[in-house]
Image (cartoon, rainbow, N blue to C red; front, side):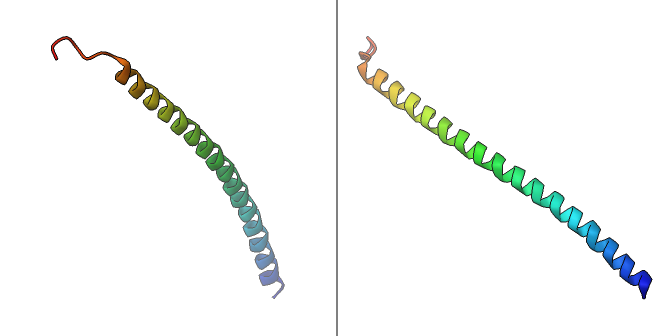
Length: 67
């Protein structure tokens, strides 16, 4: 009986360590996900600005001579 209790305590200790490791990994991934989301939003804004400015420049250009 004593051996079974020791084995169970050992397993629980190992599982607690594994659970803590997994929690740390999930927390790091969540931080990275937030950073990547922020970067995507910044890039989306830059692309929209570039697209808008390109369209404005195209409207300002005179048509080519063959028209």
